[in-house]
Structure formats: C-alpha cells, structure tokens
Image 1 (cartoon, helix red, strand yellow):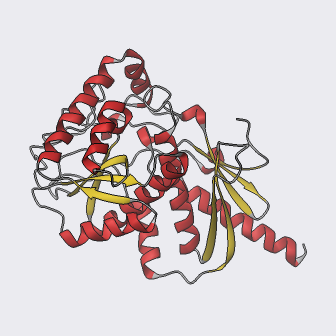
Image 2 (cartoon, helix red, strand yellow):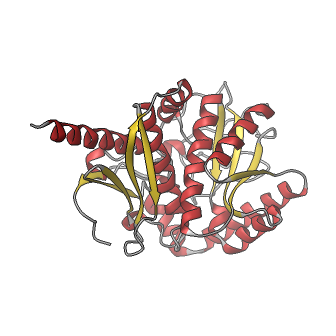
Image 3 (cartoon, one colour):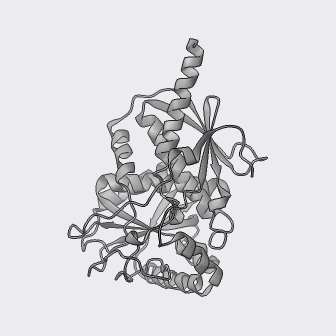
Amino acid sequence: MSDAAQQAASVAQVLQEAATAAGRAPSVHNTQPWRWVSVPQALELWADRSRQLHVADPDGRLLTISCGAALQHACLALRAAGWEPAVRRLPDPAHPNLLAQISLTGRHDPAAQERRLMQATEQRHTDRRPSADQAPPAQSIDLIRQAAVAEGAGLHPLTGDDLDDLAVAAARANEIGLSDPDQREEMGYWIGGRRATRTGVPDDVVPERPAQADVPGRDFGHPGTLAVGEGHARADVYTILFTPADAPQDWLRAGEALSACWLKATDLGVAVLPLSSVVEVPATREMLHRMLAGVGQPMLVLRFGMADPDQPPIAQTPRLPGERVVREGRFPKP
C-alpha cells in the first residue's frame, strides 16, 4: 500500500471511530436519529427520518437537535484523539437530510479539558429522579452557560414568576400530549417495555411514580420501575436553551450546545434533565418565547441540580452498535 493510501485509510479509521463515539450523544426518547456516512477524507452526518417522532416532532426540530448533539460528540472525539475537525453545516441544499460534513484540517494537541470531557461522554446520563436539596454552585452554572455560548447558543435562567409559568407550561404540555391518542401510541413505541432494538427508553430509567418537583417532568403515560425517593428538587436551576433564530441551522447548533453543556455539567458533577415536552406544543413553546423577552428562540428547557448521593447509580440507556449507524457509501436514500 502506498503512503497516500495508508494515510487515507488512517483518516477514514479516525473518522469512523469518532462517529462511533458520537453514538453516546443524548437524543429525544433515545431515538438516536442519525446516520454517519464515510466518504473520502470526510464524514457526513445524515438525519434518519425513520426514527423521527412524527407526531411529537413533525418539523424535525428535536431530531435535528439530537443530531447536533452527536455532531458535537464526534468533533470532541476527534480533538481528544489529536485531530482538528472542520465542520460544514447543511452543506447541500439538494439533500436536506445531510446535516453536516466533517473533515480534518491537521493535527491537534489535545487539552486536558478535552480529554476530561471525552471521559464525560461515557458518564453522561439522564436522571429523572429529584436532585439533592442543594443548589448547584453559581460558578458551575456560569461555566455551563459559557459552554453553550461557545457553540452559538445561550442559557437563560428562570426565576420568580417565570418558574411558575414554566410549571404551568410543563403541566399543560403533558395534558395535551396524553390527550392525543397518536402521541400516546408514539410514546408507547419508544418508552418502556423490552428494548431489543437498543433504542428508546427502558422501564428502569422511567420513574415508578411522578417525582416531586416544582416543575413536572414528562408524563410518559405509564410508570417505570425507577425508584424516585422522597426528594423534591427545590434547589434546582431551570434554564431555557435558546438560539438567535428558529431554522434548521439553529436547531443543529442548539444540539451542539446541548451536548457541550451536558458534558461540562457532568465534568462538574452537576446533573442535567432536559425538558422537551414544553417545546413540542406550539402554545407552550410560545410561553417560553415570551419568557425570553426577545433574546432568542427556545430550543429546550434544561434543569440543573446536584445528584442525590443517597440514590443508587442509574442505568445508561442502550445504544445502537457502530455498524448500524456508520457505513461507507454515497448519499443514503431520503
């Protein structure tokens, strides 16, 4: 094999390893709605519409946010491995499902923080139980906010009347979701039961009863098996993750910011719970928009708290194997 061929094979291997690492990224209902395609000297991120929530997410906003989180994971994996990635977002108008393309611009000296965040990708998880009765340090929240800003988004903290309005919006979103038989069927497909497909949310990470909290979490319509304890999460910090506009480019950047925030929080020992139901319903999303007072467009609500040390570790949700999401080839069919 020639030197050029060896170098091309090495780059392809590095990119495929990054795509596999990106499989640990968070996604709505753990749908993992992405496909990675390895092309010469680059890696393409495609939306997998077969795993879109067509009832709860008809526009693909949450799907694209999920894919943005995978994109940030992949770029972090490359930097931690000693490579500098270059990203083109939405590079081909003729293929709207092609969300991004990553290429390598040269070697990179990984910082200790990048290695720490890479380790956080293996520790990050969603915990729907109440947090400890201890507020996250203000400095930690500011560092998490800076991580969002670095990815082109922002975090808006909610206090006072806005928190009351958020509680109303979350309860209303649950009510609307459960009253829709199509959405109940969709949730039933992705939530609970046996997870032979290695996607979706298994029963052991779904609370056995509604957790005590000022702002209700998503009501999945049936209980899981996760014990929630007696905590109330009174000390949690609620924020709105927002972007300047509300277009697919912004949704993708919101996902990158979500990933960066979550990994930074994990590194700092802060627990994160995303609340997506309030952005799925147009009426409650508009309530969030008003809370932002013209600053931007709401993408997600994020709850930050300190993990309760008396609670046992929570299981991580299953992940698709790399061969299911990474392949060589040309454009996938739409």
